[in-house]
Amino acid sequence: MKTSRFLRRMVGWLAALIVFWPAFAAPAPRPNVLFILCDDLRPDALGCYGSAHVKTPHIDAIAAEGVRFANAFCTTSLCSPSRASILTGLYASRHGVRDNFTELPANLPHWPGQLHAAGYQTAYVGKWHMGENNDAPRPGFDWFVTHKGQGKYFDTEWNLNGQRRETPKGYYTHVVTDYALDWLKQRPKDRPWALCLGQKAPHSFYFPEEKYAHTFDQVRVDYPATALALADKPDWIRQRLRTWHGIYGPLFEWRKNFPDDRPEAVKDFAAMVRAYWGTVLSLDDSVGRLVAFLKASGQYENTVIIFMGDNGLLEGEHGMVDKRTMHEPSIRIPIIARGPGLPAGRVEKGQVLAMDIAPSVLDLCAAPALEKIQGRSWRALANGRDPAWRTAWFYEYNYEKQFPYTPNIRGLRTDEWKYIRYPHGDGSPDRHLHELYHLATDPQERHNLIRDPAHVALRRQLSAQLDTLLAAEGLTPERDKMPLDEGVKSELPDQKIR
Image 1 (cartoon, one colour):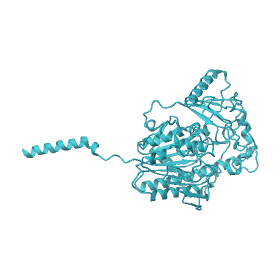
Image 2 (tube, one colour):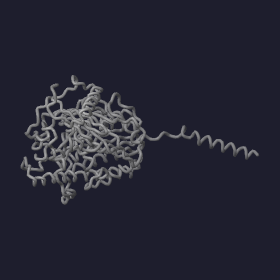
Image 3 (cartoon, rainbow, N blue to C red):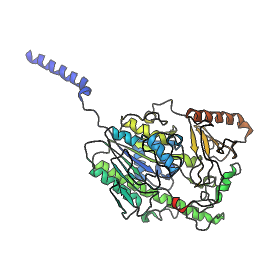
Image 4 (cartoon, helix red, strand yellow):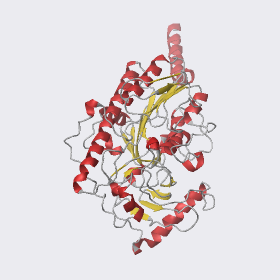
């Protein structure tokens, strides 16, 4: 009898323990963050985004285990402005980095600094590229390894946390991966960590390492279909054809004699594209090494991995190379994320922006949010729980005297439409033809509908919507300051800043 009562009590105690166990269980450990930022990486140069030629099994595996964002964009297609947006969650007009020569303001909060304040160990290793001639450590990081300017594919000089400079022999992609792994192996083990790895590849000038230098020699590469279909495009696009940023120009020195508009000159263009692809293969090797270490050290399952590019790249579309414009290849970026808090095998089609990275990382790490930012966390979206996600956003770019090949740009992209304006910069009427594309039926932007009488009302509607979005961020015509558009020029940029 007493034994029976004792057993019943034991069963009751066990049941209560099971019910209330979560209250006594240790909280889940905060996730680590591995953030990999590539430079000028087109989504279609990755296998998981549909490349027909470039095989990227390690990057593809991350996409298969996480979320691949099918419609991710930068809001200014230029390295430094976009990198500042990624870190701060702000448009370039707010953070102030409008070109590739401006420092990120030291007092401006960013997500690695926010994680550092929340107890994370933080490191930045690789291409920083905000402040051309400054390789000193920046605030918010326990460890900072970078170089001046663009860096070189071979034998870059590095500044190791302000302690010493060295020039290790070897290919940039592997050297920066070595530095990242060294930090991961040697850091104290009592806190979660966030490591930002900034790759140079696949930024111009494109130099694959030797083992990949001839991988694509047998792949036929032509100018894209839109390269010369320019009849309904603004005049500045045709004027750009023979410049540093046009398909008849030097192609980042892959063409020695220029301008060259002969049909057979496509061979130089093909060599450039093949070299670009070759640098991406090394990026995949780097990702494989990092993932292998995380798995071997038992940290993989508790690490959020985000792999992305800072901006898109034109490879002959509309007769152009480089970026800066608002055309799709210039603004589209890959973003892939996996780890705690994210589903596996999901392809998300909502429009996400570079400035969404900051709030998303902090959300995934349950860290305090940055105040008054313009980006939004995509954590709920990635899990299928954000029905009110954005359906429209604006693009901004300011004319650069150092690279006088692209006008000022203010544009609107919705889920279905794109509308682009080219302000002159002094408040006078725009002097370039606007552009209007129905992306749902014309994703390659072949047909500029701006002069189509059937779309007059839509054009006015989209223009008003763009004005509303700009004004909401304080960018009224009186306050949206930009340089004067001095037109497309033929001179090459200074050798030191290419």
